[in-house]
Picture 1 (cartoon, rainbow, N blue to C red):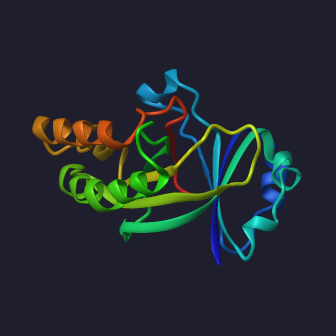
Picture 2 (tube, rainbow, N blue to C red):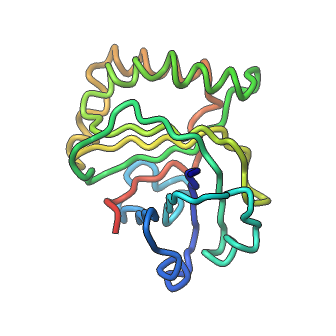
Length: 192
């Protein structure tokens, strides 16, 4: 069974509600996006387990909202939290121009993961979604969807890094494999 990740801007709430079912998780953007509010955060993130994501076409997803980006992903869970996270930061990741998709995936999962686990002090839940296929047209090229969960807003605000040195290490490494944070980085509430 494959995992599907869908970012929705200006969702049609009735359509999103009709799509709910077993294996479907819907999370709304927090009203207070903090520093990410200056960008273009999406409004809803839907994740789902489905048998055949390749069988979906743009018409099957486009009715969810004004702008819909969807991907079939290969999910990795470097840290599986045991409690619901009050805040989950979701970043739509684009690889550095000099890297292939395979190099990006290898760096993110093998090199960056231990650094993230060591230096994101308050990180309770960490999911890496490696994009296998884009399922919508008109979406930016995205190579991964990172989900970083924190038990509380305070933990997100004060324990994102363990130290100034930890911030430096993470930021230096991110520049090696990412094309920078996208304007669509979004803070999400717990699932509804």
